[in-house]
Length: 327
Image (tube, rainbow, N blue to C red; front, side, top):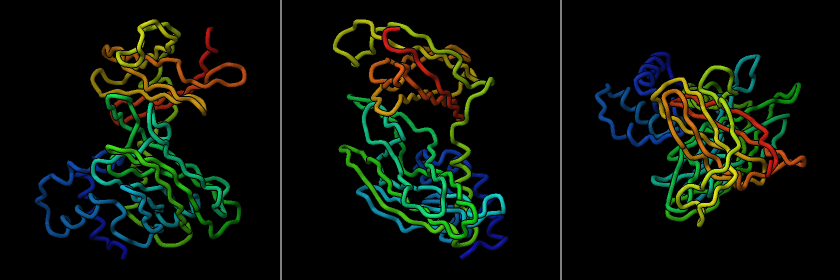
């Protein structure tokens, strides 16, 4: 049932106190579940429902049934119809994982299965595109992967066809789920976008996920300040020999001298490149090394690269065309 006005005020107050749960929806919720709570009974109940999943409280918004895939559950959710500028509201793919399991970013890193969605069976839409907040690194003795833990909300960009009144979002989702073993998962989901009414919790979670999406970098830090073509020895454990190899040294200009920083790199389709490693951090600058091995090339030999720089809660994206091998 919908929230009443007084309940919405209480939810908003609770969310303001626990905004970290929504500011980074792809991070673990375990800490918030363990935290002591001294709220009044109504606020306690609402807090528990939101901590266990922003969509656990069923309102009038659209949501597809949960589909179980091994240690994961997936579904489509929407905020319900919006205004004239967005008549069908906003939508997202939600993935919920059993404790200790993880799934992967759109580029899984050095091992894993990328998360993807095929919306080709949708009706009444000219565009449906899955978006990805930044992942976290996960390293074992063999590789470094780019993953999400616990629960992730992936926004979906939607463009309805002109004059459409009842679009239906259909997704065939493919992903990997890993703990001690890794297994592929898939699900077929369907969600009519014209049904239901507004949902406060869904809007809050999807808006938070959108706020975490990387934005195109500009002249203000954080930003990629330069890319150098070098010959460097491989990292320890990455190669049996220590002969120098073709490497790109990427310099990031940062907004803060002490905020956490990370960098992820995606080559063109077919690439199997490594995850960049931090060489040094010096105040407002950080330098990363990305071996050229595994970077796929275009027909002209150039190697497209998408860099996602994360500093604290801010993420920016930079696209570059690296020179052909041997240049």
